[in-house]
Length: 235
Length: 183
Image 1 (cartoon, helix red, strand yellow):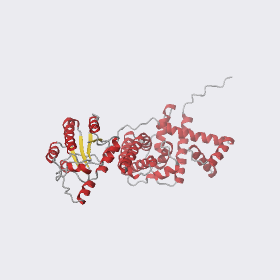
Image 2 (cartoon, helix red, strand yellow):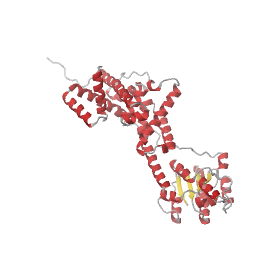
Image 3 (tube, chains in turn cyan, yellow):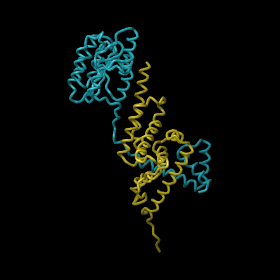
Image 4 (spheres, one colour):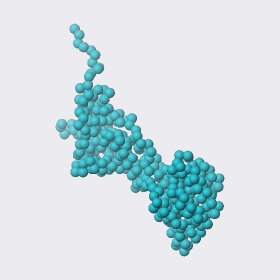
């Protein structure tokens, strides 16, 4: 094939792929009007492109679910590492859920709205409130006791004031948390690493109940879990 | 507010990732010719995309980035199969005779087999343009090759396919010529 013909053909490829500038397209269109061989080659090229597209257009990926990332396995070691709560950003959760965080009704409604097929649930608290702590632990146990058979995994994530739930110096629920951890291998309590660091800098005791995971910022963890499809419930 | 912004961006990106599934699958299937392997490649691509999508600052670039990930997954697979080969020039196609038994109804299968017979570099370029809908510049970025190479690979790939299609047409029973010469 001559260099000229090859060059012309490449121009036609660019034409069928809509890669030409306006001026170049005008040149090609003029040539197509006057040259039957050009028209035939352009037609062949277009037909080839369409055969390629047609040959795959009905193909759909067989797997329709998103892959799970960093799937947490509940081994004995991780269970020991896992533990009570650190609750994540109030503003973050309020923004995500789309309604007020401090409304008792909303918190109740959100928990009840958990779809039966949901197997991964995060309970999140960002406020130091004895009433909310008690409510959170009650809901955690309810989920674990009612849905363990279907393989539910629950994470209790605490940040800001919510960290008091798992701080040994502040919590009135240490025994309850220990009992949940020891009784249910599928619960994990998390305290926000950034929140603990802030408390430490302010001179407060940041010791947490044995088994509470403290290695990650609550916000980062929540984003990761939501990415993986976990259901978030605000308390 | 920063957290809300991050989450909203995150949700959009995840939707984009999910929305690209079938396009990725079609491209992967054209590259490897094996439905199960294509599905595995797409799942691997989506897993990597979900883990590392924060690398993509502009959501508009997500589609091209995911196809880059797919390309890397595919190359990794090829290297595992044949560690010493030059992937861009490799021809891993089956030995099926492309023109064999191609009736009108079988052209689709013939086209697929013909694509599989192309060298890997040509195959990737052709399918990213025709199935992925990418521009030449995007393909150059995705495969990390010069745009001139994109054009030459595309040219070569289509030349091969055109010849194959021409042979199919000439060898297929011609059902359209009903007129016979009569005296």
